[in-house]
Image (cartoon, rainbow, N blue to C red; front, side):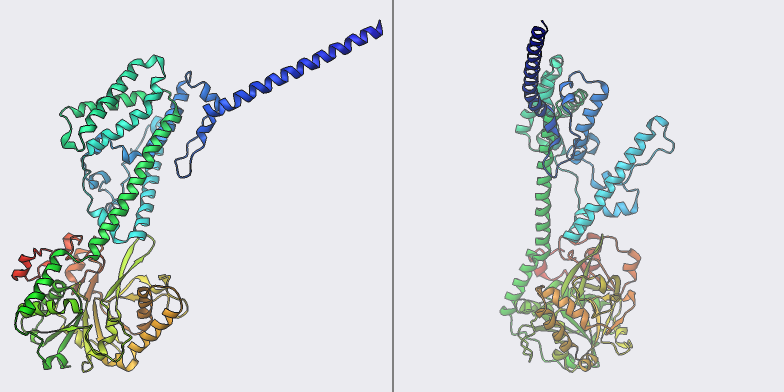
Length: 611
């Protein structure tokens, strides 16, 4: 009996083990089915491609219980969607933003923000109630983050594109066809919410309303590409769509579908913004570096007129080499710019008959430049036009060039540095009988008599120039360390008093050539960068600092030059890309330049020259 009982117990234990194994296998089978299902329903929401907005992944439990979610869960879902909406907020204009200029939207309460075109933080309630205090603080911190992000974007833009960013901020226009853009955005958002709302049996009315509004918007946008094409009652339709979208957002929806749709519009908008930014920068640079059609016409007409007329070659005048007179040198290929420089200089001269101007230009513009000054003499002053490409000099290796400007980008600001070009180092040979000259760039306007510059005691220095300490030598990364004073201020061309006698004694041109060749053989830098370094090193300890009132720079890129400083300056320098004769020039500075232009010449009207 005992043995029989023992045998029965062994059989019972085997059956129990067999049942446990069967149950275990069934559990594994069920889990193998549920885990992929749970992954498909919820967990994959947490995986996103790089560069997208990060959102919190939803768990599988939340996916299964979404229909019976509480108000707290609904609020979490809404916050997830709002997070993506916040990212694309500039694409979804509010009703109050439509047809509002950029300055109105940005505000004008902060001076720094007003200058940079950045959003100004809203007024904070003085004593918020405990109920909304947290919300107010969170909103204020969010705005601060937005401002910091915008400021960082501004700095990046200035570092990459320079004065284009300044020009863009000052020339913003109200959004065109804003209503059409708003309707497109609303249609996109409505399509994102519609599939989730359509799955809710209890929301048949809302589903029908959304479908009706979507179809109506589609019909309107098919035939309307601009605001003028929209039907009269479109405002009511927009408001109705806003109400439908707001109601849809109040329900727990499939965040995956909404998230994907909103990410699509975000990606499309970012790509479109990048494209238009690059296109705008290209067109800006094209406008800056291309001669305007009217100026090209003027040059061609003057050239033709020159060959039609009798020989008008510059007479050999004793004044050209008389060291007792006041000699000015202008290196330029721009007829109008050279004319304005000479006209403004002569206008304020005490005795213009002692003024001699030497205009160095290229072969293409030589005949037009000669013809212009024959037709438009400047009082009693003497003007000599030289073709720098036809000058016979011993140094054949010296390449003739016009003055160049260099963009220097610092942390959050861009400066334009203008220095001597290689052509400047030919002046001691070109004017071997002269002792002192004043060099004027062609983008300056004179507002005072410059005669006192010849009476300056330059203390043995070669170059008299206004120094700018906003940028120092040590801040130029391209310069090699150890061969210059890192704390030295940079000097600017535009207005320069040059002692040619001292120049020859010190062999400045030879020193420049030596530095230039050393820099050229030492690396892969561009010839412009090498010329910049060679010029700075050549005149180290040889620059006499002129008083700041002699010249004021920045009128070709800085929109906020002090008005009183402009009034007090003897010379205004339009260094930068926004020259006064270009359409992209800063409008409020153009009048200082335009008033010295001779508008009576018929070729100006024939070529529609109207800077």
